[in-house]
View 1 (cartoon, rainbow, N blue to C red):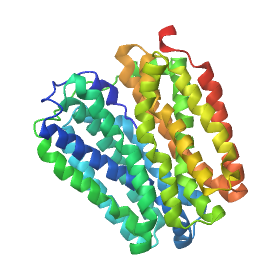
View 2: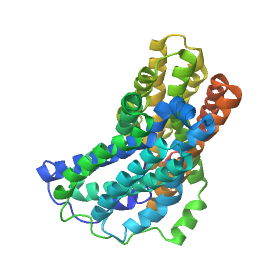
View 3: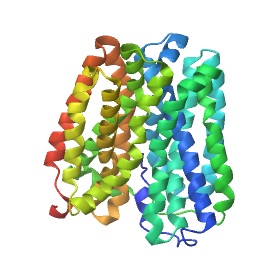
Length: 412
């Protein structure tokens, strides 16, 4: 996930404090990444124990899916206001407050889950969603300020890789935590990771995070909303996030309910899907710049062209090893678009509205992440996994058609 303030912060601002090899800079990047990893794991972990949640709370797949979707829905609403606020406040302090809010949300969710209070769990997750938006926005800001220009892309790349790493941790360890401590414990399990990250980050970030005044204006939003290519790229992001969250949310349930694997094994297998994103999101730019000479369209086309047949075939693969291979390849393919779309959308607008374009891309993309677990759950409940995977395969075909029509930035 990339926030609306990312572009503006990466394009300028404070000078770097020192060289990227400085121990304080390493501590800052490591601490910020740990905070984001803990939040990402907290974000996705209910998907790894959905059958337990459905049975315990006596809810449908659609309702259970909202436990994941609510955080993305919160992010859609809160991302731009949070980014504007962070431009005018101390991002270092905001990150600390966000991690403390996560701790409160985790304990709140744990108590509510133990008491069987579904809507209280949902409210706690909404608070966690705001915390994630703040940490992600502020983390990109402060990491980009901490290093010199020649190391900035590497440092920010390491930080943004915390998203798929956290997803993999949440998917892989959620069933184990639930088996040992009960499923409500998943809400507090990863708050400790974020708190450790804050302890590492706080002394290393001293002197950074002062307020900025470069929030997008109303005129900037208008210029972006009139750009057809921005809408096309936003739709590609929407579809990619929808595919990504469908498998993250329902892949484990499919392996448990239809294939017969245990929750622990299903979680470990599905963890492969987001984990490969660490490689995919970094390599999307390298493929575009080095292999295709700066062209963006071939990577986007390849992303959906590889994903579509894998999604169509997923429920017809009888071997666990074939399923693992499909998760690896589809996870890599889908996240190519997630890695490249935020760069691409900046290039199809004038530089002075690049930050606004990124903000728009974030909101539209995360709308797909919000809707996918809920809609996917509704289809699973009413028609089964075969139909659900058929429909997401069709979404990938729509993405392929749109990617084929995507213009290169240099031609605009």
